[in-house]
Length: 635
Image (cartoon, rainbow, N blue to C red):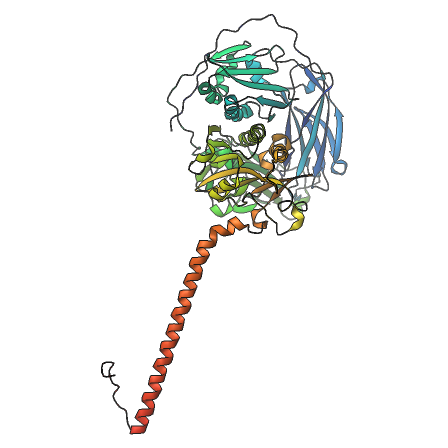
């Protein structure tokens, strides 16, 4: 498929006599809602905190939790370990920071790891334990320096970004949401938010496309024709914006031949984040490599893992093995011996593949007999080549269902359709949250194609539909039809929801080989359910955990309570759903009736044949010998 690729032509910067930038309040607080966790011994669970230029970190708050019962926890800020504490003291923390904890490139990493208890000897057997870092809040002093150019605007790390646009400009704004979400990966992207750190406003204009940063440095206005704005996402993703040293930039569209994105044939461990993977020590040590379909940009039917590396020579009194797990299932194991080269291929079957996969390598090493108590011996080591060790994806339909089908099934292209089931402003709010969360969960650039609501059923694209009605839900075969419903377990939702109380629902399902996200609502009197749509938008926003926090295939918003994740199997079949299968039921009933009639006819014929046989036998007995049976013509 050919795409128009926009090549920004940066105009000369317009030098203005600027008013002083509006400073941020002193002692600004920056919160990160999404937690981080790991179950790899010695690995760091890291949360990245955006820090505006001009702010100096003063203190850090948060909470550490772990499944371990002994050992130590280490807290790291930047490259400095600021606290080591026993596991028994896990929980909330509030620690001061100093000048050496300055942010780098607009962010500051806060991390925690678990270290097993130190013991004498080489007999230690350590089971992996989970450690989680959450509720991170950075207190910073000083005055935030606002961006002074378009390049600085896109190079900064705001905590929240508001998108604005009216009429046709709103369609262009929604098309640009994935690009903005990629430009600000740690920001909460929302529609028309009043208290956001930055604002990106879209306007229709007859002249060429222009990007203009306001004097305060917090609002970027983008103007152009509807056709130009429709291709804006490629401008925002362009590296040429890093050269936009002024507050005003002109961008011209130059149509060129574009190539459709294709998934990678091979991913090295380095591509997956493990540049120099290594394992060492006695007992158990492990490392984890995520192989998510969202990172690959397509669904998996299997994979092949290639290991390339070296291990240390194993003494005669030591036993060591390298175990390989895929999603916690043992897929291969190697006994380490005097041959130090490590070169192996491991096939991962489809039955073990999910949407979020984990490759875990575990080294088990122990000394034999009395030598177990002797300390001071060099540890067993396994070093892998991060570039030569690879995962070869085997792409296909995959096994994921519900929300876990996305974003990988989009393959870089997603349709967007807004229906009349809710107001335009509300539809824009939910569409923004959905597109931003999908992009921030994907390593693949998502390009949005706007669709008319009547074209959704015939489109081959995986599509986001906001404001769909009951007719569309029926046409697409949605698991939840937008009408009354009841659940098998009444405690799942508040009393009356779906029968007497309104609801709004976001559902993920497959239709003709593509994934569909359908948001719609129902109320007993047919009134609008806009407030419930906003509840859905808040729930899927990055600040609430983003796309990775969704599971099952239904998210139901209800009045007076938080949205609830539900599996469609928990719904009692609705009338319209059973209507879909009624023709099949009639055919089945007809088939059963035909079989019954055939059986009755056979039984009648058998009884008639038996009566004739008995009559013939009686006649033969009376005549004293067998008689010929008359033919049917003689009868």
